Image 1: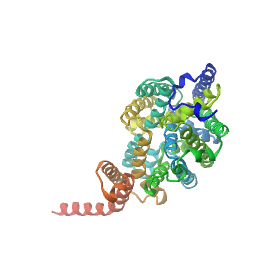
Image 2: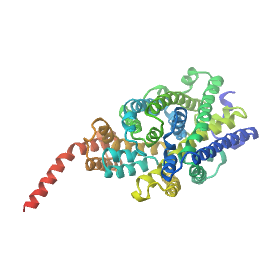
Image 3: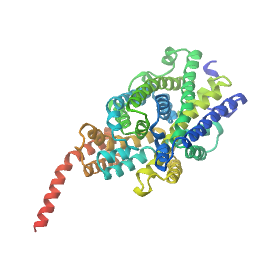
Image 4: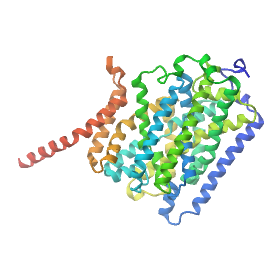
Length: 483
């Protein structure tokens, strides 16, 4: 097969053979069977209502190392069309910003944070923050948490996948896909998510590996890419400034306040299982990122004028032989679904556990309502973001890293140092500055200062000046009382 045989734009359904559909459908059936198995195990693992709800949210804290690794890896790549788009347009810049920076964060989490959070026996990240700082901090972090886990980028990915495969308008594909995911997420709780992730883990890893291997087999190795791609595709910054590149480093640190990581740590059978699981996952992520980065670079070299968001899939389906196409399609869909169902589940948990009055906590029906509500909100937000995955990541990641990361890290290093009101004041100041900087016009030097840096500065300032402001307010109140 040579480059001239590839089309820049093609309706994928025309290339899918009956054998592909059979394999694709078979893998989906296996995945849904895993969901049903998860529901069966759930019914046999909880006696009381509290145990049932703990099983719903955390699988009864019985997540073993193989399941921990599979569900963590599978949960992290639902935005596959986002990372491949970055690789398609900027080359190994994607591996740096969506890979290396994140590996550093994963290792920090495993080595320095797992033991610190395990002792709290928390159920959710806002629940943990409440135990560390106080109820106001818990409520505010729950609001952050909700927006951070809104699965907007993954709804877009699912919509793009279905649109490339079946045609139609993007928003309708997103809506139909989300409804299906909501149905099986409601059915089995976190246990169903974990068991479906186990199947999706193997399929997604095998899929991206096959694409890279067949690319090398058909076109050659690094020499082919160097001959057919601009030099900037092999630069660490991809032609961007150092400041812009480092922004992604700070966004990667938002892993340290990512609810998916915390949920799996809380669900693990022990802190050691969580540590080993994160480190093992990091090695697998490294291999996965190599496959997707270079796979998308092959797509750019072969079909350079293709639409960046769907180029990887368009290239892959033309590259693969009949039968293998169906498997890889299932692998790409698995990559999206494994993240989308986890984020839907977590956002639903935030609504039904962290943001409701105490007397309503633990109600399964509220969790189901929460998941359904989140799904619809995510579709609406995906339409508002105009299907731009990179913008979604940049926006939500900036707020999370700028406003929540620093107070939590200080809380780990210096327990009881930050007060409840101080946490709230600093985080809100970070929100205000980040929002202002994002929307205000700038010129000269300030035009190159990202909103993330402005938010981190404001949050740091809030933490520093709060004790002084508190003393001034107390002094003024005393003077007023004396008068």
